[in-house]
Every structure is written in C-alpha cells, then in structure tokens.
Length: 334
Image: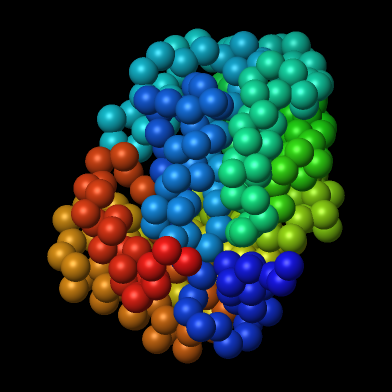
C-alpha cells in the first residue's frame, strides 16, 4: 500500500518541498476524560478525523510526568484545561535525592503507553502519531513549582542536579518506550529557554546536560520530532539548533514571527494561528486570513499550519471548523 497523503505532506514540509497544501493540526487538553485512556484514545482519533488533520498529537494528561513521583492534582484550569497540583513532592533541596528512576511501563507512564497503542491502532498508519513529552527542566518545575525550582537551582544546584539526572534518565526511557509502543515521533516541549525566566548563561548548562541531551538521544529514532518552544522572550537562536524536524512556538504572540524565524533557520516551522485571540473571538475571515498570511510569509514551503500552543478548551467548535475549512480547503472525507 502506498504512502498516505498525510505522510506525503508532512515529509515534504520537513524537506521544504512543494505540497498540495500545508500540513495542518492542532491539539487541546480534555480534562473531563484524559484520566481514562479508554476514553481519551477514541476522542483523539475522532478529533483527528473530524478536523482532517495531517498528524496526531497525543495529549497525555498534563500531570503524566510527575504523578508517579507523588504529585497529586485536583481540578483543572478552566481555560487551558491542564490539571492543577494540590501536592508537590519537592519542597526542600534534599527532596530531589528522593526521586527514583521509574520504569516506563508501570503506573501513570504505563497508562500513557496503553493510550498510545490504542491511538496507533485507531489511526492505522494514515498519519504520524506524536507522543507529548516535557523536557527534564519542565518536569522538575512541575514537581517543585516554578519558584521553588528556580530557588533550589540557584541555592542548591548540586541537589537539583541529582534530581534532574533521575528525571532525564526516566524521560529517556519513557521516550524510547513511546517510540516502541506506537509513536512515530515526538512533541518535545521546553519552557525555561526564555529570557523572562532566566538568562542564557543560566539555561545553557541545563540545556546541554538535560533538555537537549534527552532530545538528542531519541530524535534519531523519530520520524517527526516537533520541538515546542513554550513562552515568550525566547532564546530562539539557541533553540533553533536543537535536534528536531519542526519548530513550534507562539509566533503570533511571543515572537519571532514566521518570517523572522525563517531568516534564522531553514527548519520546518509550525504556527500561524493565534489560538488565544483569533480562535476565541475571530470571524471566519480573520481565521482564514491568518492561514493565508502564514502560507504567504513562507511561500507555502517548510510550513505546518498550527496554533502556537494548546487550544483553550473554551474555543467554540465553530471556530475549529472555520480553522479546518481555511487550512484544508475543499477536502472532505479524505
């Protein structure tokens, strides 16, 4: 059987070649069901088919990477849909040493592998399936809270280093397991490479030893690695050199723009959609205008139409249909 249209589009976009249309996709948290893989898997496959996307980003619940180390959650953000922590396992510097390397096929991590297998079976090879991973520093901040993580990093760096080593080893094992159990590629999120969070001199050693290091180990096995640069005031030139096929960030909010980014890298770029304003409040013409502008800015090559981050759970379905129609055009049922 020949290669699907979705795979052809994605691989052509990665290579910077001409496409019939730019590959398209979006993602969102679904906290009402994401604690049950048997519910989340069919929802994920249905979302992919309903909106005629070209890849499937499997949205593990937002607390997937920290629950097995003792973090608990209660309630979710009413707009973003991510789970809110009600117990953080890291409070004092000595707590970092209590983290143990986790097996990837047990507990919450094992549940996510089950989810991946079910999504893989539902998509049946039609389109790339991506596992969502958070970089080691991002997981560390989730375990301690952002302010505590940064304070420990500056006051007790050796303690944090020990914890990050364990986190990185666990994440690497889990990433390998994801690729073994159904993922074609990885969506790898980094949030600390922002001038608003820390200076470059402080992040660079963390990047080299942890965030970039884990990504480099697993990227060679991935057919589609999408590097998500979370936040604003990004260290974009540093991140653009990370191993990945595609770069994704909030190009319509935190910058740089797609055109500015193209001057810095020849990587495939994923963006163009203002998920915070236009999708929430925009007209069909405004949504279509963003899609048209993204294609124009990159001459239709090396581009995936995508939001800058997860779509808020409050976005109306009619806006998502408008986005699909603008991105996909007259295709139906393909």
